[in-house]
Length: 199
Image (cartoon, rainbow, N blue to C red):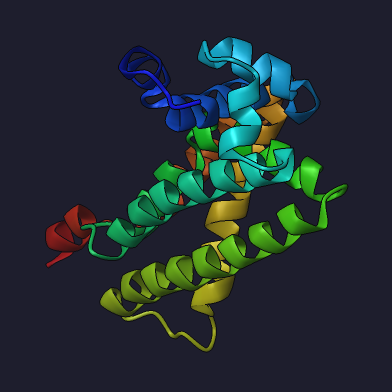
């Protein structure tokens, strides 16, 4: 039976709403709560549409991960050309909106091989871009890259930021203020403003 114009209008944007609903549920309640029925209800569509657009829930999860990954990669690529690439990486990785969703995908990857493979591919792309951003920052300040490998510096910045977000998510904040202040002091050493004042 052909869809009527009315039903087509009603289902317009359903795929995007399903993806947004899935991301919202995962962030707020965890990946286990993102069932087809819950996702459909949150998106305001018929539950049959979940499997119309996504043959399996894994397909839906992968679509959400890929969409989020592309948005995140765009921001991370911009860090390379930022005035302060390391500070840009710090800012991106302390954003709890993406960090909380990423944590749910890490947990889900323990049970779903397709998610694990997708997450690994994304993580490798992120690592390459973050390393490039760190290389730009360190070279710009005449740092010896053999003593301070850009991949290690980018990992210190990104992993420290993500760890703070993960701990904050469970209510653990002891030492966070001190660590943030320490990171700010270290990032200031690679600040274009500080460099300009020194010359």
